[in-house]
Length: 177
Length: 97
Image (cartoon, rainbow over all chains, first blue to last red):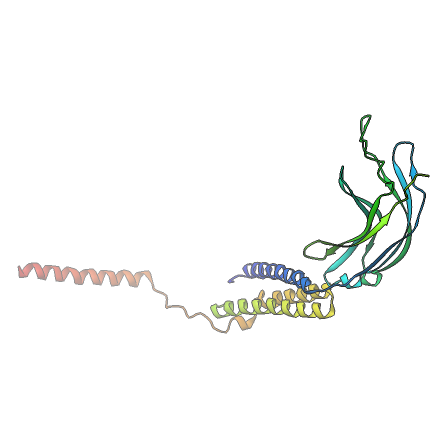
């Protein structure tokens, strides 16, 4: 501390250490925050189920998406990435997710979602050379699925978290058009 | 800057930094604004710089008290005197034998 350069060094070092502490405490304080989001997902209309010439299945869904994510926002939230996925499970492949809609919310004022979307649910078959997996691309007929809304919380400092609400009990048409 | 001044500078810096961090956290928490917190803390850091880096007069209130300078000549004379004294003692002790 006997020369001004040493004093500059000391102030800088301690200030950065305290800044790190401050950010750590602020991001830990987020755990005290309790959020109560409300999510309503409805399938308004299911379009005709089509078998495309290349072996893919395709269906058009009209969704009603209603959500109130205002309570998810804290002082340490930079933005939310919200997406709705159709999910189903089959024994050949396990867990499948098809993203239907997504959005980015940057402000708490915009965290109330009320929208109607028309979304294509395309089951693309995987091809390796000329070989097509027999069960792929043919599994949308009469399929039971869930609609799930996920949101990724991106904080200013701290841990990136994901939360979700699952709405089960939807079914696709039993026959192709 | 004297010893007491250095101690005072370090104490002032630590109190300013930790104090501004506490004020910044509480203000940011209650206004729910992360940027407010960072700006208040930045202000505290600038204040700590201004207070503790320059050599302000209040850091120099306890001037050093140096010992009186010792000169080489005087010291050699003292050494000479001591050696002479030791030599006399030595001769005396030999004479006694």
